Amino acid sequence: MSEQQTLRVPVAYTGMTLHSGIPVHMRLLPAPANRGIVFKRLDLPGKPEIPATVANIISTNRNTTLGLGAAQVMTVEHLMAALRGMGIDNTIVELNAGEIPLGDGSSQVFVDMIKQAGVCLQGERRRCLRLEQPVWASGNGGHMVALPADELKITYTFVTNHPAVGTQFGEYVITNSVFAEEIARARTLVFWQDIEYLQQQGLGLGGNLDCVVIVNDSGYLNTLRYKDEIVRHKVLDIVGDMGLLGFLKAHIIAVRSGHGLNRMLMRSIQEQANLMMGVGNR
Ligand SMILES: [Zn+2]
Image (cartoon, rainbow, N blue to C red):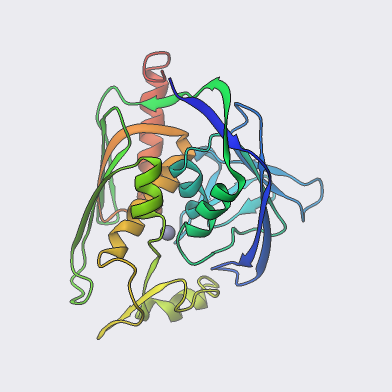
């Protein structure tokens, strides 16, 4: 049996955001068993809370944004990946703005925060979501399948005809140590030709060569942390998005998926879980 876990003490971090390009102060606080992961906007009247659930996803345009009522929080995926990848069930994420800080474009600063806080067992059973049948989703040229499994395993194929990036393949069983050592440091990729378009949309304003891997026609503009950093980051994004389901035990096979397709797959997984109520959710 796995027990639920939370942080031992509060931890804080201040940093820039990727899309809105403003500084944000964030605190991760211990929370009681069965509270889940909850975002709290201290800057808004009434300090509204937004639970980290699939139902609260309001946008998947280049990031995963959650919202409830008038409150929203952008770019939750790299923090969610760190929390689930490091085995955190319950925490309150306090923010004074509507976006999670970018850190170095990976999950590393959040993993460091969790290690700094320490983790404690809460004496309550963790409820993991398991599949009884395969589930799939396709769209926007991408495909995802989730197969029943006793662990979270992610197989990703990143497809591009860009000569410097190439097609990349990665497969990882997500344990705390695999996440911390193989996945957490991988950063987001941006194609040079997309930057102007993103900035016109008001997105990606806080990105620079320290925290985003940028590639143009002649190759990478910065030094990679892993030769296959891009596919590792895609795995990171899936860990983060699937973290909105709680702890999922499944083998996810993905080709060219992004946040929108991740959401479609999660909804299909939830539909099956509802059908199997009492059987699939054990
Ligand atoms: Zn990402």
